[in-house]
Image (tube, rainbow, N blue to C red; front, side, top):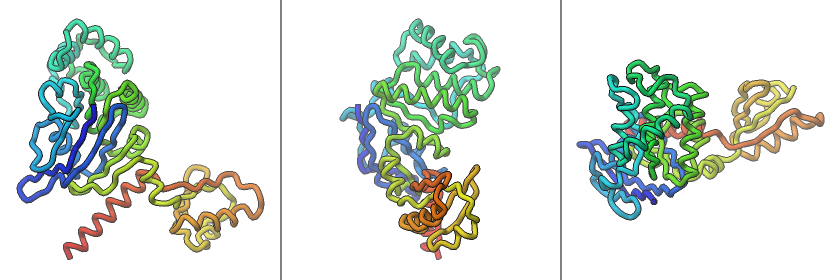
Length: 306
């Protein structure tokens, strides 16, 4: 039950939406697909689902093409939510369940279970248009997962949800993963991506600019961030060669280093008086890496245009 994307490209006129994309998603694995708007994420999802055809390359599931039969085993949550506002929750869910080959009686029973599990405020007899945005999103999520898909594609699944409801949905995605589903999801919140993803792929203008495990990607940038709780002043810290900036974070400060080795010098300084409350040296966060890559690539594109 492996998804393989092999050298896939897609062009719209002179614009290259996806450029020689390679990706493998195994059962029981979550792939985080990130990038700015227009990077090629949604185009990739549409090619996987065969909504649009790739110009080059091949996409296979279990070694074969994505047929209509395969699609019944896929759960797809689009960024543009697609609920019928004047239908009741139950009729809506039963409609989608039947499209995936479920019996109405089985779907009806599972719906009740899912309503409780996701703490949906409302009844199955309510029309979708009467639900809050968050509860309507939960219903869309239920429609995506009710048939227990082997493969999940989730395009911005947490948009508009508060932290409590985001955690509910995140736990369900993990449960699907633990039950053997292959999962691809996109999200603009790098914290969600970092918590959920086993592997990561970042697109910029359709090109792959980062790929690998979260840990390996972060470590490749070096341990150039220090969290410190110390009585030393910002000026004393900034006087250390290789300390680029110091920013307040909670009860401490985050220090950005030019090189990993600067951490040793900094550690000697802050421990001269003995005990220090907190000193942790780590790689940059995924959010910092995302911002660095976006700004770096934007700068390169500007240089090319000059």
